[in-house]
Length: 243
Length: 294
Image 1 (tube, each protein chain N blue to C red):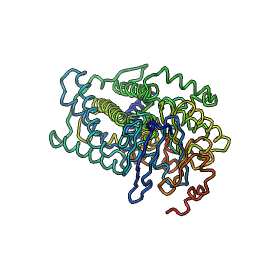
Image 2 (image 1 turned 30 degrees about the vertical axis):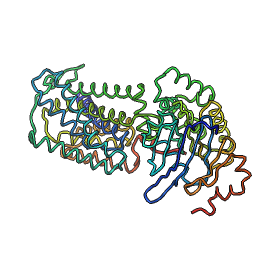
Image 3 (image 1 turned 60 degrees about the vertical axis):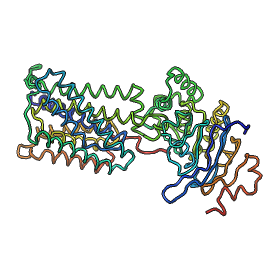
Image 4 (image 1 turned 180 degrees about the vertical axis):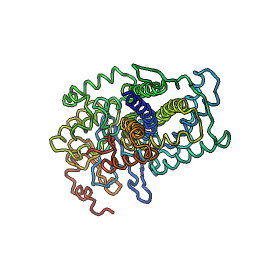
């Protein structure tokens, strides 16, 4: 962090589902141009955290600020208008819509049709396979292609913060490589990234800072280099000693 | 030969009416997972508006009937269904029954429960002769109106920006909202369109039967609902096709069954439905979007 106010600031965030407290008083900052990763086992509360920021679930307690403005309580469609895009776990491609239509839905909040067109053409130039299949239903794409499409679709809203939930889930290693090449390119394009991953090695390869989440709290935080050396990492990641 | 063509025209026109009704139900189901049984009361409301405006110039009657159905559709969404958004489908279904009963009973309370005759568009009842085949003008109008509305709606959904947002919302409502698609606007538009379809169906049915009555929409909606199930819930093309097929099947059974079995034609239609659902429980044209690919 460079001392300036963070782009995203989360403090004391708790999320409850009935009697279960999925997230317990988590605080988090993401600076502009920063890549922050949250790693941890299944059920640690990572997806709940992203869902609260995106407006999908209402937090039980805590504050979420984006660019200095409070975010909690905004409707889903207002969060994306504020500049935050989420690529959810499982990608949620519109399978019956064509590849190109998926991208156009991603540009819903924009009024600059010509610039949207240019963004879509640039994406097809970068991913020629998707360009060739632009008129095919997106459900016919492979898992990796769908992940690339889901990320591109989120980017078409021109977000300042991109949140990715398990982008490597269910993909072959070679395909994950391609997805992470894309993530690095996005970062170079000046978009901040909040990345949730079970695959810690992958997350370490792109992140500036990493939080290890377990049992609804951040058990350990640091740069990838620090966490690599930290003997507590395995215990934190695998939740030893946690409820 | 004349008989065959007459029967086919009859089948296609009835199929068109059911397709339009099924589409009205399918549109709402697509964006809200609500099976709107109150759709029939939109048909009823237009019918009684035509009755109230009877004697006025035709455009006034048509616009009045259309406005009533569209405004009533928007009002039911705002008052009854919006507070329940996200509720499970059973809750939504039951509340749509409540809305349906409420509207029907309100009408009976303030107007009358008995059918009323209305001589709407009498000119269309005349027979016309095309290439030696005598046909009822109204049936051709029904076919034309159905075709125009189906093509128009398809155009709207396929090519406009807003239609694209509606299709995305119908497939994955939450994801569409996360991309900025306005939930309230999409749902209100779906209700307005369903009102438009109900109004069109109502005008055609009233012209055909010459009667308005409180339960005039019910039979239509039940048959159309069967059509949407056969076609595959959640797929608009499926709903329209399913509704069309059920309408066609009804008329063909009427023509082909021996006279003493004709009174049971609905039973045969429902038998066909049972068979379809036994062998293709997801419908003939299931919505591909309902299954997740990981």
